[in-house]
Image (cartoon, rainbow, N blue to C red; front, side):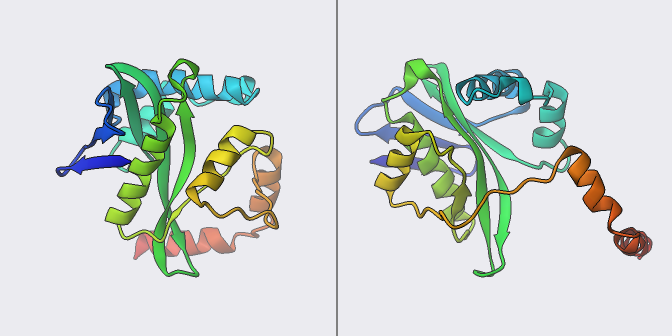
Length: 193
């Protein structure tokens, strides 16, 4: 059982199955280097470390600047950084309510099997409930059977009929070029208003 103490910000895990060695807190600007390190560790686990191009400056700007694009939680086990969850706001047009998208959920290998992943996900779920979100959405690699079984044990819903889609690089440029200037004209009009 995860018990979360929420006295404004940040949330802090007070107990997990009677264990008090775990603390979950919001990441701060001082955690940017740690976040970057753990992002690289996650990418290594997923065999795509070479695809990480985000810099510490990117993370600082987008997570801790004047208009944050994401939030992150840091899990500490016995005062050692053990993992993180990085998430951002989304919206469900079907539900007519906000949601959270969990971009990363990662626990360092030496800290696995201690309930840290469950506690991080529980903390994100707690924030979703606090913010009246309809749910938390994320993706899992099809070969990661350990994670899939874990999510199934929580009662998460899988959508096998849906494919994850991403426009990036030249494909993104081609899609933007197909716009014919309509959207840019709307942006210019809105900026004037």
